[in-house]
Figure 1: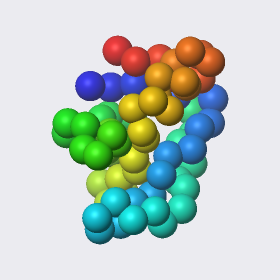
Figure 2: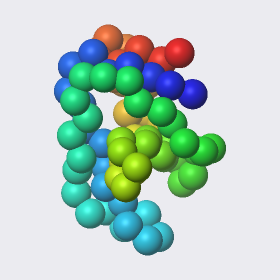
Figure 3: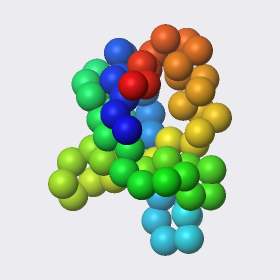
Length: 71
């Protein structure tokens, strides 16, 4: 599934066992969700080497605020 970021938002950078390692900014553009939900997070392919994570509830907030368009 793809989604479009209309204005910059933050994704999580998570390590092994979903340990929080900070944030990754998502600039305006189109991104792809890679894989199913895991521990409440969706994996977002940012580049070939980098994956960010957005919690499902946070993505829903971004959609309501019209910061992100899914589909």
